[in-house]
Structures are given as C-alpha cells and as structure tokens.
Length: 239
Image 1 (cartoon, rainbow, N blue to C red):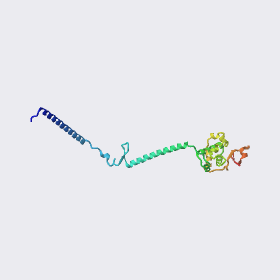
Image 2: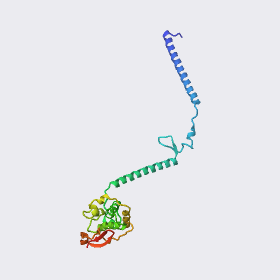
Image 3: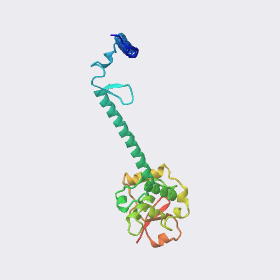
Image 4: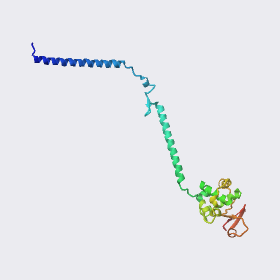
C-alpha cells in the first residue's frame, strides 16, 4: 500500500513518540536497578543496641539519650520526689520561722507562771530585774528578787503577767530610774533563775515587797509586815 505524504508524516511522528516512551522506560528501569544495587551495597544496621539486653524493656529519660531499666527509673523517680519533698519541707520551715519571728508574743499568764513555765522573753525579764535590783547580792539574793516578781503575779493585787509587774508605775526603782534598761543579766542572774524555775527554790515566804535595808523610817517599814532580811535587802508583805 502506498502511503500519502500526509500519512507518512503522521506515522513518523507516532514512531518517534513510541521510541521516546521506550527510552523513558529503559532509563526508568535502569534507575530502579541502580537503586536496588545501591541498597544492596548499603551496610546492614547495627541491631546490637536494640537487643533484649539493652533497650527492650527499658525507659528513656526524657530529653536525653539515657536509657534506664524499669528499676533504675523507679529509683530515680523516688530520689527526685524525696529531693522535692525535702526542698518543700525546708521552705516551709523557713516560712514558719519568719512567721514566728513576726508574731506578737503573748504575755505569760498566772497559770503558766504557777507551773514555773514561761517563755524566753519572760526569763530574760526576770534575769534582767535581778541584775538591776540585786547586782551586788549573792545568788539567793537575786533569786529572792525574782520571787518577789512571781509572788506579785500570783497575787490578785498586782498585774497578772511578768512584764506587767516589772513595768508597773512606781513599783521597782531600777525600772523607774532607767537602770533596768541599761543593764544586761550576768551568769549569776541566770543561775538564780535556774534555782527558782528548775530547782523550785523558794525562801521568799510570799514576799511581795523589798527595799534596801536602812535604819531610817520608810513607807515599807511603817506600812508593811517585815518578813526577813537577806544581804542588803529587807523583804515585806502586806499586813
């Protein structure tokens, strides 16, 4: 069959298209074969890191490359929780200390004093008044001054706190003239306090007043009942 010129051109174009497709297939097949060859030449991965002795049954620490056994992980969690608990306890203790230091101390009441149990502030006040009023006296003389303060607290005729008794107007000369504020108690004052509080020593006979011993006429020796003299002080109670 003889083809026309137009038919020849169409046939030629089709043959070129078929040839191009064949080349594309051949090239594609070649690339695929090349990939297979390349993959075959790749080294096998090292599976030893993932054996049963390593990561299987293990826990990875978050944010790190560290792997732990379940037991190690649980121990780490316990230690972390214990550390946090200790930190919280320390913070709470610090907060409580600050809170306690800012609280206004409650004056020691008669009931507490009756059991010879009072706070550090009142202990300091008692030792301080002993120093201010009886610095030159012996330990018992200082203890007697402390007992006068306590006897007043126990009495219905005076304030019912240690601080109230010591600071009451016109009662203790050492407080009125400022000596109480200037002095600091020495070891003997605290020893006298120990005699009263710990050893329950009391030779005061209920005295609620004292003055420096004198032969002159005073309000004390003309108004009150004399009990005894110790050192340079004479002790009294109301009639």
